[in-house]
Length: 225
Ligand SMILES: Cc1cc2nc3c(=O)[nH]c(=O)nc-3n(C[C@H](O)[C@H](O)[C@H](O)COP(=O)(O)OP(=O)(O)OC[C@H]3O[C@@H](n4cnc5c(N)ncnc54)[C@H](O)[C@@H]3O)c2cc1C
Image 1: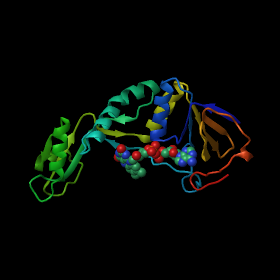
Image 2: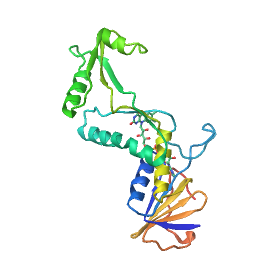
Image 3: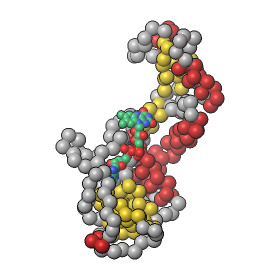
């Protein structure tokens, strides 16, 4: 089976699912290709992903101002993605960055405070007994303090976020193909992608040739067909 699209996105993970949602919102014909999470991790021989669990920290404060701005813009869009998909994935429980208190030999929290002030984020430094009283479920080493970003930070469920992005992309017309890609061929006018089941997808200006005449052959993730 062969199909053509404007874009074929390989990898239905955090980045691929987001790219599919954005591209399909423009009206482009989009295919998002990637396997679902395996039921049996131990005996799974195919490709794997880094989002197969339930929590990823999300926060704004960071030394890199570009990273921080992108993080803030992403966090501002979580509600929109949840509304578009009907899938909740964000838990605004706050983020605490704890380390030895400022003034000692370790300046990590001083640098966090500088980054916080540059970004204008509301996140007080909490030290000593106040830190223990505010977060009694943690066991802090003596002399620790923490910068607490209470709003616009917390964690996302990465499995749920991928599902939400995928559902929102489908609602905007993207085609989701749950398969592993084993071959990608780039020509001057198109990109041809083959799945392990023999499904062929083309992005760009597509003109199909029989698979046997394709050259050169390449493989993904160490597999060839
Ligand atoms: C233990 C751990 C903790 C982390 N904690 C945080 C955190 O707290 N905060 C944070 O922001 N980030 C965290 N990260 C990083 C974050 O999870 C990754 O940056 C993010 O998942 C990367 O997204 P991705 O789409 O590039 O990759 P992935 O989410 O791994 O998605 C890649 C997708 O491509 C698919 N794929 C691969 N090969 C093929 C193929 N041949 N054909 C088809 N599909 C293919 C895979 O199946 C997968 O679905 C953590 C990562 C790990 C592993």
